[in-house]
Image (cartoon, rainbow, N blue to C red; front, top):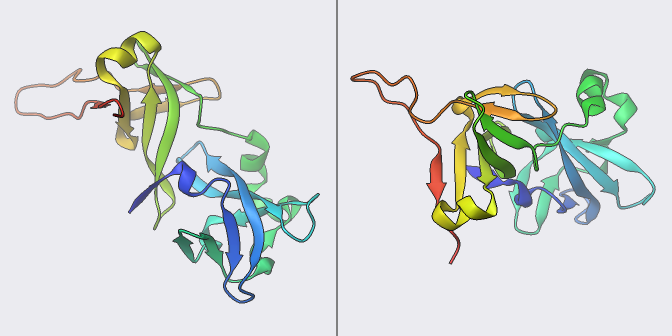
Length: 180
């Protein structure tokens, strides 16, 4: 099942053991090499000055009331997570990144993304187009299979319907209808 990024961000982190809020998610920690949400920066409920990390594997469930975890002990100090040190240092953010095609055609900027809850991999990115383009077709949805390169400055995707030979099919960015 896919969930949009807003399902995870600025949500209470609830302890199943204690039955209360132990933190609040602030932002996602995304690995740009494989587009996996490795975890979330969280505001600790017991020490407001402390910024802790909730690893995605410690999430028990996503509920309307927030993100369920076993207990406060699953929230870690950033310096304790040696394997994630390099990814945390990158401070990679997907929202707002420009998206261009391989042929350098500008499509717009990432406005949202959908995460597959079981694996925590980003399955789709949603692109907000410029004001002029948005009047004609709304936004675009790009599947993770169409992404060819991710850098700190941009995301490069396959050109829509380029290189399609007879008998082959290729997915194109899906235009989204404007919200009514």
